[in-house]
Length: 460
Image (cartoon, rainbow, N blue to C red):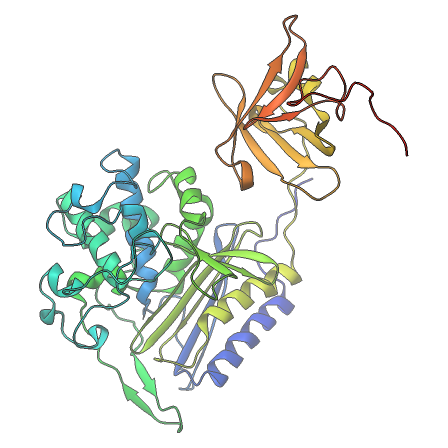
C-alpha cells in the first residue's frame, strides 16, 4: 500500500504561521511571506503584514537580490552541458578584454576568483547603473584582491562577468536567455527583471524607532545577473523543486548535483557552510541545506532546499534589515521535517538484470590491512564500500562501462575501484587507488604490498 500526504497537518501549518508571525514582529518587517515545498509541490504559504487585511500572498512579488545568482549559474551550466565552454576555461577564452580574463569560469561560479566583493564608486545597489556603463566600471582598476583559486571571497562583479559571458556565448541578452531557458520552461511567469503588480514596496525601518522610509529601486544594469530579479513565493517554489530534482528541459539532474557540491575553499569562520557552483551550502539542525540568500535595499530573501527531506522553504520580506529570512527559511524546513518526517521509499529487490553471481560473490567483508570494510551491491551495478566499525572512509561507486567502478563522494571521489584476479581467474583482491583490500587481514597468500610475515599472527 502506498501512502501519500499532500496537505500539511493543521498543527504543522499553525507552527509555520507562528514562525512567520514572530519573524515579522521581531524583525519589524512591513510584510513577511513564508512558503514550504514538499516533494516538488507548494504545500503551504502564509504571511503577516503591518497593514490589517492587506497581507501579501504567494503571488506577490518581492525583490530577491542575490538569489538571482543561482539563475545566472544555471545559464552558465547549460552552456557547459552544450559543449560551448568548459568550467576550467579562463574567462578570456570566451569574453575578451575584461582585465580579469585569467580567472576560470568555475572560480567565478564558486566565488573563488579573488575578485572584489563590490563594484567601485558609489553604493551600487542604491545608485544609477549609468555610473557603470562598461565592465571596466564594474571591476575598477584593481579587480583582484586575492589570488584566484585560493579562498572563497564573495563577489558581485564576478557574477556580472558571468552574465556578460552568457550574453557573449549565446548572442542574446542575459534577460532573454533567462526568460527563454529557465523561466518559461519552469512556468515562472511571475519572475521578472522589473516589478510587475502586485508587488511589495521596499522599505528601510529605522533601527531605533518604529518608523519607515521608502528605499529606491534602481535597475542594476550590467550587474543585473548578480541581483536584479523580482519573484514570488509560488515561482520560487517551482525553482526549488528544480534545484532538488533537476528538470531535463533546463538542466540534467547530474549537473544540478554538481552545482550542489562544494566548489571553493571556505573562508575564515565559514566552516558550517560552503559554496557550490552558484549555490550556498549550509549545515543546520543536522541537515544539509542548499540554496541562496539575497538582499537589496528594501528587501531580504532566502530559499533553502533539503534534498534528503524532500523539503524546501522560501522567506521573503520588504525591509532593508531586521527580518532574518535565512534563519526563518531554515526553520520552516525544520518544522515540517520534525513534525511530518518523510516516509522512506518501500524496500524493493534489485531488478533481475542487475544481479549476477560474480557481483554477488564480491559482496561482504574486505580488509584494508586490519581495517574491516563491507562491500554492498546497489542499483545499476553500483557498490558501496563502508567501514564495519563505523570509523573510516565510506564511499559510493558507479559502475564503469569498461569494468570496475568510479568513486562518487568523499575521499575516494574520482578514484577507481577494480577487481584484480589471479592467473586462474579467481579474485585476488580489490584495488582502490593503489590500496589493496583482501578477504582476510594479512593472509600469507594475499597480494599485500610489503608482504606478510611468514610466522603469521602471534600472541604475547
